[in-house]
Length: 172
Image (cartoon, rainbow, N blue to C red):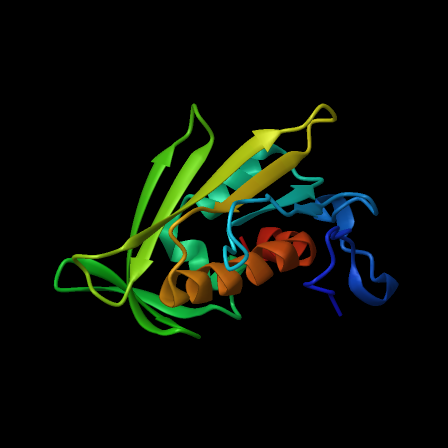
C-alpha cells in the first residue's frame, strides 16, 4: 500500500511481481511537496518516473478514450454526450476536455461538473537522462475542494500507472 502522506514516493511493483519493461525503477518516482504561502494551501507536484519512453507514455495519456485504462479507479467510462466528452468517475459524472502538445510533451485534461467551468490539470511528459518517461503533475492555486478532489484521484491513478503499463501494452 502506498503511503500518500510520505514526502517521497518510490514506485515499483507490488508484492515483487514482475511488471516488465514498463515498471518503475525502485527509486523511480518521487513526490515533491512544493511549499507555498499560508498554512491551508495544498498546492503540490507529483512526479512519477517510468521505464517506458516518453513517446509511449505520451501516446497513452494523450488519448482521452484511454482514461479508463490508465485510471480505472478514477474513471469507469468516457463517452460523447451532446458533442462533449463525459466521464463516469469516482467523483461523479464529469465533463472532460483534452488538449495536447506533443512537441512540448504537455497534456491538459480539463474536468468539472459544469461544462462551462472546467478545471485544468496539466501533465508534462518528458524523458529523463536515462530515456525513461517522467510525468510531472502539479496542483496549482487556487485549490477548491472540488479541484482538490479530482486532482487527488488522478494523482493516485498516476502513481499506480507504474504497474499498469505492461497490462495496457498487452491489451493493445
